[in-house]
Length: 457
Image 1 (tube, one colour):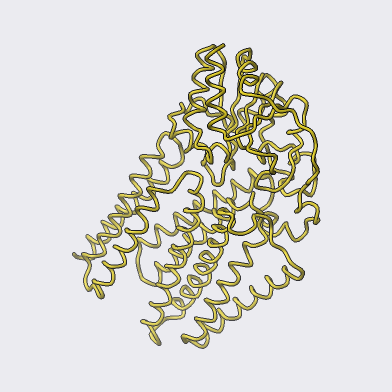
Image 2 (cartoon, one colour):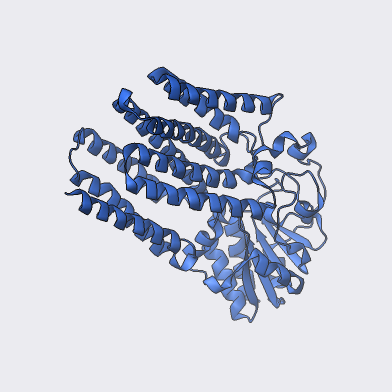
């Protein structure tokens, strides 16, 4: 295959990536965008085999086979509740792979490497290793293999600063000295910095860090594209880096805080802000029959889905409940918070799986003004994104985050398994409001009982 045809096919793959991002910007076109992106990735992978010379073909095919054997079952079997963890791991693997490729290419170039190639290699190794180790920590937090609270310790900020200084110093060492030892030291320090970088982030802010690390991975791939002289890698990496950066900024705005505050706010927070409240107070609980009676006489109902809905896999049941209420002449809408769940768009994907009509989904800015005219707000496992502490308690982990103002509704129904705080680890005063009714139990089982009771009325 001549170079012109190779570049043309690479350009086609790049166009597919651009169209994929465009499709992913709206729920109606997201599935098509995914397919187009997969086609582009397939083209980009296959075309490499038609550009000689190809070395170590057996190893390459074996690696692809192993990756497919792991990736395909993982992607097919992963539950929606675990999708953010999978995304975090994929981000980390991408960054780590780019770093390894850059290190191998650096060894191949040897003394012939130009200063620019060495600088891009250093950048790829640093950012790729930070992305890998940081993504592993985000995975462990989301999977609750470690505490979801911010991990801070005396002198932590100074250790982070010292590690960053060591990374920068080692980067200069690699550029000046040229050798394997400086590069390995740089990789080790970068892995350590990635861990220290993510540890102070609380569970509620982990989705923002995933998006940021995704942007890091994209920049790493783009830099490795320069080292490998691959235009396609530069295009793909730049697209991922740019889109990830924009998404990170949008998510930080949705959380109502700066990115710096998200990453390092735990160092200035008061101990009680991180610990959360633990006092026991009376709450008003109800039965499925009580909820059904309340819904039967409502004129407008807003359903607020959260991670609890995903855990219970109750999206089809909530769709059945919504359809039943609509058949009774009740106005029904779904209030969607930008960071509900564990990743951007988590609730949109979950509801799309149940074929919930898109016109019933209302974004936060659209639905908030309507809560004053809402008879019942049903909150299904969405604790933090409706917590009034975001507006009333300075210093708490979610203070300043825009929320769904369900407290303005005439009645609030909370579906919860227990009184355990949300992912941010703080108490929700709305649970103790006299107009709030708690329905304890698995969300799917509870909603099924509510549907049966409402049908009987």
